[in-house]
Amino acid sequence: MIRAKIRKAKTDTLGPVTFDPENRPEVSNLLQIYASLVGIDVKKAPQLFAEDNMFSFKEKLSNVLIDKVCPIGERALTICEKEEDRLLDILD
Image 1 (cartoon, rainbow, N blue to C red):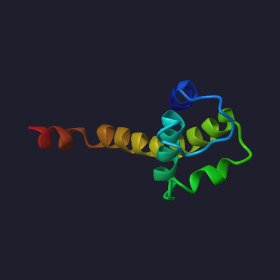
Image 2: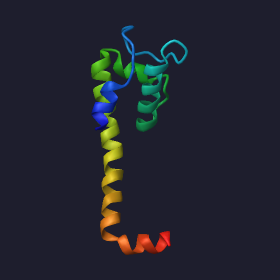
Image 3: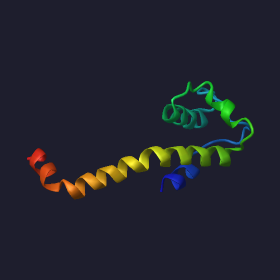
């Protein structure tokens, strides 16, 4: 689902991946997401994609998102399954 959402994310066809929030807000937003996930300055992120087209950039972003988000979801499901009674007590 993550990969499909990122593939559908609006971008442009202006060539290389660059960080330009004013003229390329969609691409810049995706770069901000990537930079925050890997812990780098967003202005340095485009250098990582100098040889990539938009499709390959989105694939790399998807991979990072999946690596970071899926373990959180899996852990949440495990907690819900194994500690349901405790969670219900907390909610009460």
